[in-house]
Image 1 (cartoon, rainbow, N blue to C red):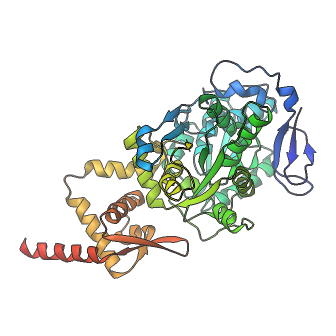
Image 2: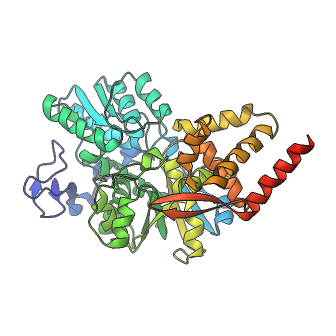
Length: 466
């Protein structure tokens, strides 16, 4: 028997329609199962998402585009670079719309059809909206998506080509979430926002099932955190396997957030209640969630597993994205590149042993991230090193007057290139020792070094000879 149960007061509700909040205490609801009944469940031999149907809430209609069954790559070259011996990348870019959210869309759309809905509504800053639009197109449901102003154009293009009805509302996805709740309450449409439908966790836990079949149980699983639901889903998946006696131990979970927007990490470190961080900002749109609905569950998952919660700067995220592509041939979106960006520090700080087995979740494709594509196109069109040198000189001259952060530099240069390109230049300048950085008020500020000032003077001297 499958029921929805409150994580705080243990009140139980019927499985469907799915709802995410307890009527008695306001706690988050999740699906719980009778594992004794499931011990006799027969799983299909095919390695797909729907192989695990018996371990999911009961679904009659099955809508599928071939989701799940994604590769687990051994990242040999990247492992050497970050100081590990056994590193694996769970590559969710291989799903039909190139992200892990296809698992959620498949299960939600199937459930919506079971319940007789003809329309769904979803708030999304990218992947969930793109996935839902595709699966609604497959099944004939009307798809309504609320997006914030900050959304990757590649993901928006997917929503549009799949013929979703798109409404822009608010600056961030937190604002859009409020609008999606209002629309669902007013219209009765099926609520498919990831944070507000417990089927999200059920769909994403199948990633853990696949990892266990492909590898066994790793020592560490590293997951990026926006709303916090994904790391909790993977932890729930491993726990269910353990309770079914399919595995004999559990992994430790590492949750990663951008340093400019890290309410979950802050709550974990300070042992405090998660609050909305209205001043936060990150260029990694998938991590830009100021009020994480599943933040408490994420903290509980990390703490229960004996894991860690860490942050990483935007510049390091964009560098890691190029590093994964260059060394392993996987084009990951910025938000999921954060998982590999933290590895060197975890090893150097003795949190992770160099001999441990580590799995990093790659949630979506970099082809959807507009900033990165524009930066690459700009690089391709640049002849020689003239423009590259000119940009670095501009950055150094601006920093010679005052310290500032990456977004501020981008605005001062006149927004003539992408923010990702600015961070790439800053990373190059840092490696050459002409720029250094420090943290202030939750932001990473850059400052010119004495070596940088000498480089500027050398450029000035050179120009007088030309």
